Amino acid sequence: MATRAHPQQPLTDPPPSGPAPGRSERLIARLIHRWGFVDERDFLLRVVQPGLVGLIDGTISSLAPIFAAAITSSSHTAFIVGLGVALGAGVSMGWSEAGSDTGEETGRGSAVVRGSITGGMTVLGSIFHTLPFLISDLKKALIVAGIVVATELFAIAWIRNRFLNIPMRSSLIFITVGGVISLAIGVGLGVS
Image 1 (cartoon, one colour):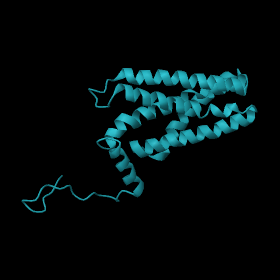
Image 2 (cartoon, one colour):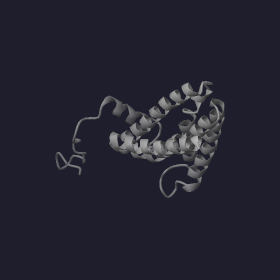
Image 3 (cartoon, helix red, strand yellow):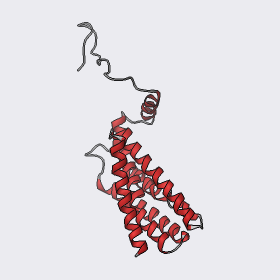
Image 4 (cartoon, one colour):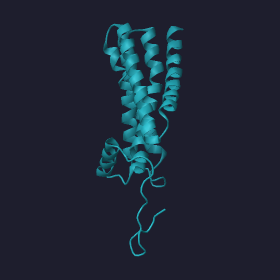
């Protein structure tokens, strides 16, 4: 609620409650404004949400086919499967996001831009843990891929915490459970 210091002075916002924003928060706010977004909520709807959907999908959905291929065949096969999954899922997710909402009714911005963000982040979510399978030694490739997946899951949890205000612990649990389910499917298929 706005207050007046004097009856003829313009309305001003009350002083913020809680701690003042830190340097990184102010930097993010300045960048968001500089990039042409009205505020952080506008940035959240137009960039973070479509990007997060793609990153989560790319990271989790690609675990099953990549690890199944690695277990049943070779590091090279896992790399080819992972590349196919990353590119195919990127197209699919980008197309789905662009086709699901014009942005006019929801205020979420251009369908093409959102679709490109979702598709690109889906590819990134898949490709990072695909790249370790360029290592011909399967055991080493699996170890590196596991480290990459853990890093990806942590990054997703941080983004959810930072932009959606979901506690870090809840975010880590949520994203890890999804990753473990997908990984278990891949391992189960790989050893069958």
